[in-house]
Length: 210
Image (cartoon, rainbow, N blue to C red; front, side, top):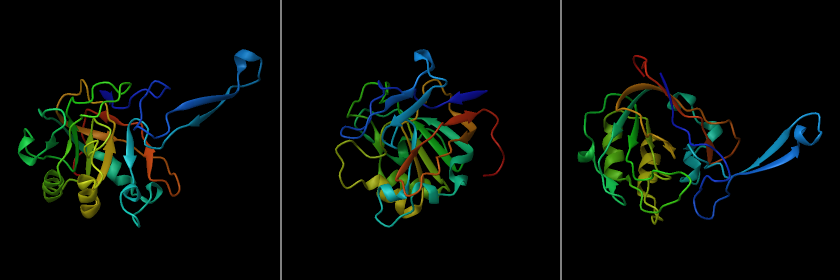
């Protein structure tokens, strides 16, 4: 069984206000007599389901092409947390114990990627620190950011930088049952970039170990 966690990329997909929305420029079109179809994508690298690079929130931190792919591939746990919109998830909000080095949190507070809303749930820095202590290496969430919309100091991002936790944002976790899986969410090797879109999937037979 495969679960696709990636929203459909089209001009209807909403990105962070002020960022570059996805636009397809058609250079050649077989429907108009060309011998092939050729397109250009104009968009932010923080597009849909995406991996933040540490350089997005740390001035001298690694870019996305410098990240070990091991963060984004392997044993993963999905949890569904019951929290209000606009809240920051605390350690006590997790419904069960950590059982894998990668954790995806389904909050249900950002239900439609084609409708941007500001009051999504985010992570508390206390939660990030607690996850690090439990051996978590990657944290993913079904919202546009691990920090609240209005945050400028980005405490959850900064705590992920401190403990070297990889970040996945913009996931679609509707219909994914809680449990253990194999995560595959590989970023592109974009030299010097602060993020990369990913095609994030879960496979239902989790590998052993990391």
